[in-house]
Length: 325
Image (tube, rainbow, N blue to C red):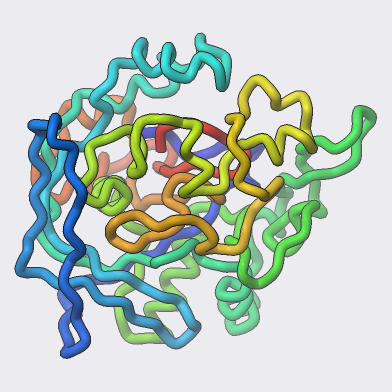
C-alpha cells in the first residue's frame, strides 16, 4: 500500500470508478474465465463461481466490468528487504524498504459483494464531458499542476499554473487517461456521474482495487514475477522513456512498451478479469484514507481503510515508474 502521490508526480495519477454490483444481472452475463494457477503454489484464492462477469457501457461511453465476490491474500508476500533486492536495478535500493513497509502483514480479505469496476482508466474525453456539463474547475486549475517543460537541462518535470488536466506538457487525445487530477476532483467526477445515471459511482476501496488487480493471481504482478515483462501488460518506465529522459536510465526496465508518456487506454494485455492498465499508464486513486499500520487492524470483510487520516491511498503504477502496484 502506498500513500497518495505528491504534487511532484501528479501527472502520473488518474481516476478509476466503481459502482455497486448489487445492480448486476442480465441475460447477457458470461462465466468468469478460468484462472491459470501455478501448480507449485499452495496458497488459496477463492472467487464465487455463482457470480457472472459481464461488460456494460454507460451513457458517457465508459465500459465497466463485473468483478465477482471472493477472497484473497492482501499485501506483499515478500519482505521489504526482499523487494529491495528484487528491484535494486530499477531504483535507489535504500528507498524500497521504507516505501513498501506498509504492505504488511499479509492478510486474508473477503470481498463479500460483486461490484462493477471501470474496464479502463477514466479518459480525457470522459472527464471533459463532466467539466463541460458542470463548469467544474480542478484543484490544479485553481492552483498549479505538474507537467513536462523545457528547462535549462532540457525536458524536465516541473510545477506550474499552466499545467492541469488540459495541459500536461505532452500530447494527449480524448482516449488517453486523464491526469493531473486530485482525489477531490475524482470524487466530484463520481458524484456527477451518480447524479447523471441514477447509480452510485465511487472510487474503489484499496481492497477492491487489489483484489481486482490480482484477478486470482498471487504473484508480484498479474503476469508473473519479472519486472522486465511489465511492458507486456502496461505502460511503465521503459526503454522508450529512457531514450527521451536519459537521467532515468537507472530506474527503467530494458523492455519496450512503445510509449514515452501516457498511452491511449486499453493498448496492453488485460488481466483475467478483463481490466486494463492496472500496472501502468497512470496510478489510481482509491477511496480509503491512508494509514501506514492499517493492515495490522484491518477487518477481514470488505475493509475500507482508517476512519480519518491526512492523505488518501493510490495504487497502481504509471508510465514514469516501475515497481509493485
